[in-house]
Length: 127
Image (cartoon, rainbow, N blue to C red; front, side):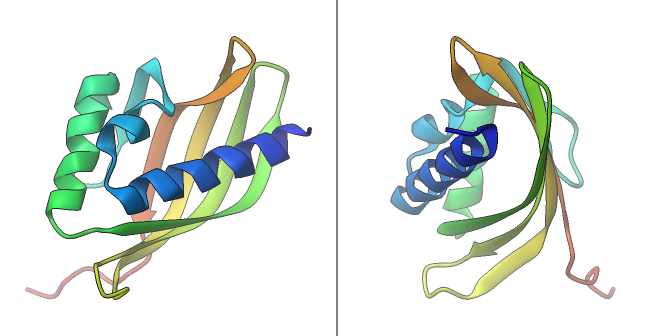
């Protein structure tokens, strides 16, 4: 199986866990010292903080995440992925859409998210 196929499989499992509202499983996709770099926030570091972040997003009404991989490049132990995302609510309404960059690291033969950064493609709210 190619690295791209493994990343696509991990993303599919991530989307399924998100759909089930399983923040603990979402956190398990990250390395122990993984970091989120969400917009309008400081770093979110470590698996427990990542779990709390994703639980908070789901508690705010985000019920689904769709990831579309555009490219995967890298070397044996680390690759980066560039893609698009759509976050949706309970009725399928789009709550956010944008793009992301993920740095994946291979740990014990399994690809894990090490750094996860994204930003919205929607216009900033007017004041």
